[in-house]
Length: 347
Image (tube, rainbow, N blue to C red):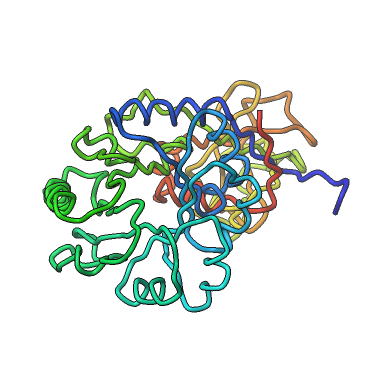
């Protein structure tokens, strides 16, 4: 396919990405501000995100697994790279050679790392999410004895909500900090950063807010949109009053309509929740999605945009908080679901 361009693209705003990171860094007070770039940089392209944030001063990056780490090692000189899911038996050979560190999450992983003579590592402690991590109520200091722990971390379960669990996890982690030795301590994700400096500790780990997600009200007006999907019109057509549009005939034209068919669908991450609810923008006006989103195509009402036609590009209405409310999807799903068929174009 070399030499071909796609009929759909993501316009990616590197300035907005860096601006978001700088706001999150400032919100964390004196804490260093890292970046979660797992899931290929939340769908934007991890290498591109890492390069831009590193140039802005970010030094700490987080991925999920060792394949993600290996893809980034060629550009990770002078940077800290942590693998959040720890280290399986299958990972040990590449992990021991890697500049990345495992975030050890279980007694078994700790034993495996020690037995292999592994070097510096991070450790995850579960303070209330009941996902990955050592039990905060156990003797964590004894569990990690003999390890060279770079960062002791935990993760908030409900940072994006007004939940009593936030303060419970904050206090549990503060108590651990007092008795468990590590070079640094880290609790706050994007939402945790918004909760205040007593959640920040030494290092914050924002994810969704870097990419334009608004995790809490405190971030509203400060986080800029990074991702702007655009799709090309394949056909403009007239639909006669009473005819239906799309699968299962979910939209009946109330009058004669001008419709554009775009090269975008649920195989690209534009899911069926946008059926009859999403919109595109062309000629400076909002153009509603009509009918059902299909695998590769959507239809939009272009009656208010007389000058758009075959070959023209329309911008998809995709501001993350609003798109989440419209579609019923989370802001995380909206980002990470954007498929490989988009050309990704950075400014």
